[in-house]
Length: 402
Image (cartoon, rainbow, N blue to C red; front, side):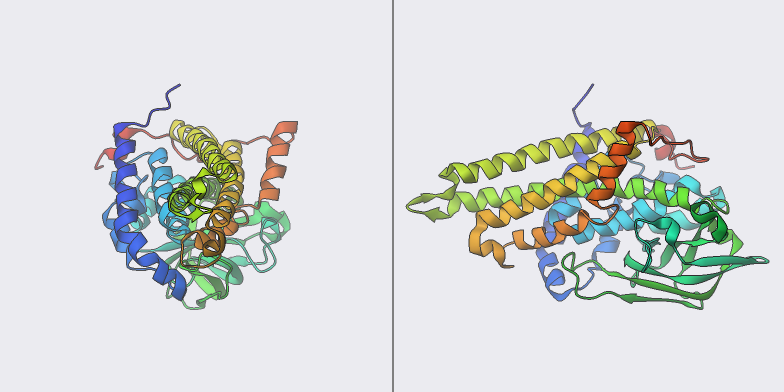
């Protein structure tokens, strides 16, 4: 058992934190304040290789492993949750499913512009009346010759109003419930496809969140991902990837909250001494560190399993559940340490608290993850083999040009 990051991991960690410090931190408060998506960061992230960090070089990616992917997610959320969300949706929920489930022709066609940030992509599963209950989706797809006709609505979709491509799910056989769901890749500009933005969210103001409407959208058969009826499996495997980035990002948020809390506690004085001298403040800092250490171990374990090609639904669920709850508590403690200043946007900790709440809801609420963990513990839940698993990391394959 080796807990040491490799030289490559340390390099990518240094790169992402340096990028976050120089490119994201100086601008993100203004974007957050104005509720605007920082599109200027996408090509910069693409140029650094972050948008396709764990995709093979042959598909335009950086050829790095899944632990590197987690480190990038951590560093982005250290700066702001909204930017990490962009990577999670674009890479974890869209590009990686194509890599896992797509044909070679689909990988060659779709992945390179995603890996470089030339195209921005999103994932459309949730609907106005179907969130955790995926089988309850109302979207429909019927085949007519060489095309499918899609109708339906998607809601709470990150990047909906700024993305170029959409991985969406619709029922091709409603009688089969979740076994009748199929996945499709749509392009902006397809007739009948419209999007919009949802306003007045509690947090992640610098991330675009919106809706997708499909009215008789004609989608070529070659844009179907996987086979008919595999949509549910594709969606769940994609969500495993996204939950991994959410957990890793939550570690980054905790680190940011603790760093700012320590700096503030050292300089803020009450009754003639820094508040860092008070034991109850020290207790909150110590608990922050405890949560970070546990969170890192859970994330690294999930990343290690991904690298080995081992199914990690339980471990990733546990990491997502613990890390997001821990981040929310850490951000709350950071606001408490900052006192009245923490309750304003003068300091970053108020933004951390607003942003951290979303993560305990999306990619499965904490309550859903408790049920998942109970199912595994009782032996009621078992992972069945997929037709196509996310492949184990092979450095020779990942770094080869072709």
